[in-house]
Image 1 (spheres, rainbow, N blue to C red):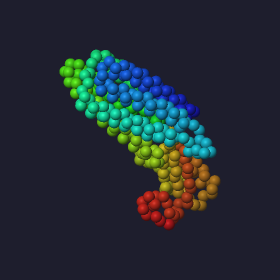
Image 2: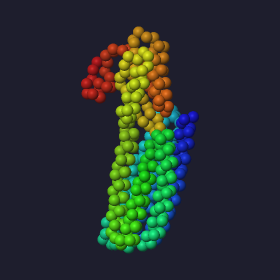
Image 3: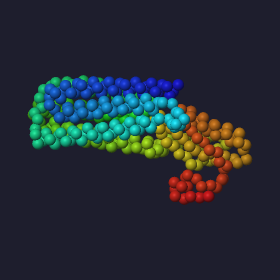
Image 4: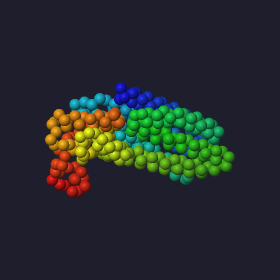
Length: 306
């Protein structure tokens, strides 16, 4: 039931994002046509990149929610991380275009006109964007979706972009500083590059099976160690794929217990983890307490032992 609810929420957020990006692109294109502003153009290009990214997000969400198959026994969750990586590339590309156009306009100046119309368009864009971000943040909180989180990051940039463009148009309108429009566009482009770098970093962390946060790992350890019969643990490792978290751990148990008893203890530990993290997939191996063996922990620490 939880998985179905998460899937529905992610699909709603993805569709809303596509529709919003299309609407913003159209109204900002009108503003560019009437004003000739580079900062408005930079915001429009950002919205076009968001439209493409949102389409990628929608496709990724649909793929990541597919059930596990014999060929993909871990599911398709990493489609979301791939989506975030592609979005980062689009953001970086749009930022490079804005920087190029800004340099060209320093050489060949363009006069910004109809600033009042541009300001009105940016206010409308700001309101629409804030409504979408509110929806996306709610969905991210409920589903932990990497793709929706990445998509939301674009629109948070849009808020800053819209505000800075509005300031730029006000300055040009009342102070007639045409160069200020180019400066604002350049700052937006730099911010886009930073955002693209951060998104790419997060996506690569998931793609390369980075561990979950230390706080979550400590919580898992506390849950496992609170189970009756568990004398210790080792070789805990975790990774994330979409909304699923995969957990592997070795439990150290009394070697005199029967297989049935050790299995029951492992089930109790697994149930405690699932109660705290409902979408977790867990593999537990039972080891006799005090057994000397070469472990993953030793290999990671560069100290293989037998």
